[in-house]
Image (cartoon, rainbow over all chains, first blue to last red; front, side, top):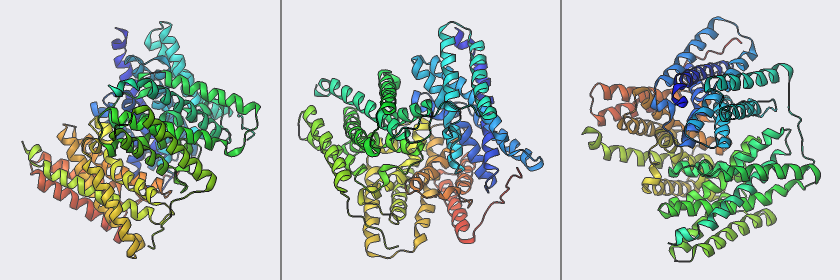
Length: 208
Length: 208
Length: 208
């Protein structure tokens, strides 16, 4: 069963996504006058929010309740980033990079989790988007920032493109590992390109 | 079993509510510089948010995960509205109308879903309110607008009145179809009256 | 089984927490031009939001769906507070007190509910924090206020300290009643001290 053989890969991708999103939470919270615990809360919300919503929607056991190691990974990554920020001056927009990596990893893990549960393709792709973007939305709301996802740059769009690619490759019989790599790369390329080159979809403001 | 015989009615009401709320999402998002995918996300959140929260609270399978046709209805209605907005100039407050229709339909479908699961009357009426208003709240938050529901006009109140009427009619033995029609009409009349005639409950600002 | 013998205590703590949080919701909403139903909605969100999220995360039946008495307690407390506010002038910051009591009671009931389900200690302590703070966040967002929890005062931190104390005392074999009393007192002392004496954790704004 291919769904089982890629379990370690999904697991590793999930842990990495959690750690990277926790780091992005600390990097953004670090620009606000938050105390240590406040930063940890933002890091946990960024790291665990998207997957929690996905699991509640799919009626799965929430991943970090089932396996505490995700929680530990988020805490360790958050504290490590916190310590790093104390000693190194980081460029202000640095958190955009781990945020993009987290978006890619969570999109893949969310879509794969939904496919593994037998969700239809459209539902599965949306679960990837939910997993990818919801943690970042919660992070930004907690930091009282306008969520990155609504700034018009390709964000949810990048996630959805990657999720649809993953669903399509899976349907075409491509092995799960390569499909995951291709989809994560697609999300990352589109998202980083959008940041670097200010790619945007044409914006159609209604005349009303 | 009357709970089964009205299933097609509930199903139709649910699909119509989803489509109408998706349209309201696009109409509001259309006034913001969102790209196509951003509008789709807002449409989906408006169309599916309330029912998703209801199903998670009731520990049911989330309706659009169980039946992808809701998702398809939301997408089609969203894209159709998007196309319409491109070619026709629409009055700015137009989205208040589908929003009110969606409120009525979702209030009825939410209350009936909870009653069908044997929820007590107070819980069932609240589930109607949750189903009715939560999608609109998410839509407004995503569009960075103050949620309509908090503007003091009769909104959650209209929903709750309709839900309580439905619960009361069901307890009085009125057939489900007529009860649904009466409750949806009540929500719609109160909500549209509130918009048109600026009906408001007396507002009591505390002296503290 | 000790987990059963303290059920009445948990039940009482839960009901009291719900009532107190509903009161805090009305006290805050009372400063806004909300109608009666709007205040009731805010009261219910404040009273039931945190426990609902905890139960959805733990995949338990949501507490107020399983037992309507929580809903009735929230409604009665909300309406009673509303009546009180009509006849007595209350100091503006009064709602900080029931908010702190509610934080303490919910932290304890949330942590104990998670422990009773066999959740690992770190997950259990976080469930206490979620139960304690989420209702207040929703209340503040509905009232369009910056959530108290983000103002930098010890808030989530107070909740987490109490939850960790409860988990530690439970692991050390302290009886559930005393552990609950100690943990609730700890949350209350830290939170009220933070309000009164403006205690804050050192704030480390990143240099980036």
